[in-house]
Image 1 (cartoon, helix red, strand yellow):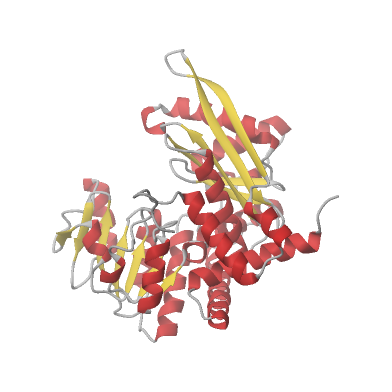
Image 2 (tube, helix red, strand yellow):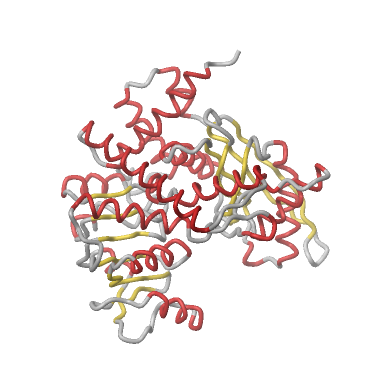
Length: 420
């Protein structure tokens, strides 16, 4: 989708474009196509919160369920001043496809509150969270809709939601959310799960292209949970991490970056900049470095038609959601660059969230080794499924992933039938 009058397409416009493209190729039944194109449920809530100074503020929040044909709705809750209903709709739809790609029995949902938690005290955020959880309790539940952390929310946020929901029912219900602290039913391996899934996908792609991961040069944009874990795990498999960045800029070393040393440096200094024996580069320069693997794990829309011709990586692994514009997608496909799309590449997080939900419901918890083994099996199978679809239809991995996901959700919808 090209910008209209210089304005980039919205996340919802991109999501619908990608869905329509897959539906066209699948020759989807018009009725089923219409059902899957819109959210199943949308809830908008306006609720008061008492602030620390005694004043009362009214906040607006949302919870959108795109589809529950394959199981309970699933995705995170974000707190941000720029949250919009349209954004929440787009992210809920993408979660439906992400769960279907890795074949876990969830549908897609998303939630958000329009607020800036960085300007609020912890007590204010807690009161906001508990009231928001109460307002959306008509939708959420371990068998209907299972939230998780997202932008500006974390395990503590999930603990408050779980406690609020449990208090309403009179007993503990840990399976109502995932991403909780271990002490109240969280899962081992959750923090590294998304980055670990990215690493597994990169290893699969490298093997398919005949690239030896040992010594392969990797550039990672973003050094949050996803970027750090991806860099660390790829380094453990023998890859050479030549560049890493955060919001302040990036660093480069031809001989490789010690990820553990960089993590300590950032904890002490607040930035990746200034690590000894590295040179400073910009986030834009990082994307165009000579390397075998590029991992955009920070912002959306960083790979565009403008810079795509200059990207030198052989593999692009989307650790972030939506880092590549549709126009850039076409350029990479034409140039023979293998791009692993976000709905496959960063699905490790929701997969281990599913493991957490299963463990909560069984009241029996698995070891970290078992979780990582199960995650590798699921991510490897999903990568192979998408690659097979791409080869059958002569297309790129993103289009193949959407086709696979949409076909699975459509099959479930058709098999269940339309009620009444």
